[in-house]
Length: 75
Image 1 (tube, rainbow, N blue to C red):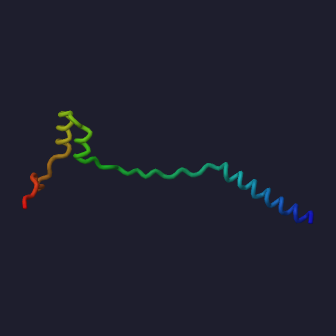
Image 2 (spheres, rainbow, N blue to C red):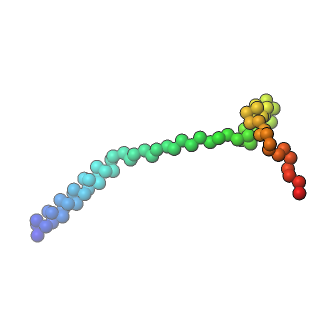
Image 3 (cartoon, helix red, strand yellow):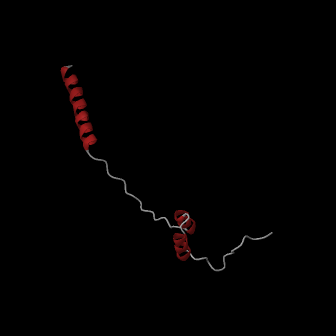
């Protein structure tokens, strides 16, 4: 009976030591996915707010596409 109790205690001790060792190792850092967000004309104008110079810079940066309808379509 003493040997059985000693066996159970030694197994529990082994699990405890292994648990402490695992708990102290640092977790691997997750990889950061770098996603480049493309700035749109709307975003640029939103950041410019009331500044005319910045708005003009946005207009230069994002020129109107040729062939795009400048007005809303009529029915």
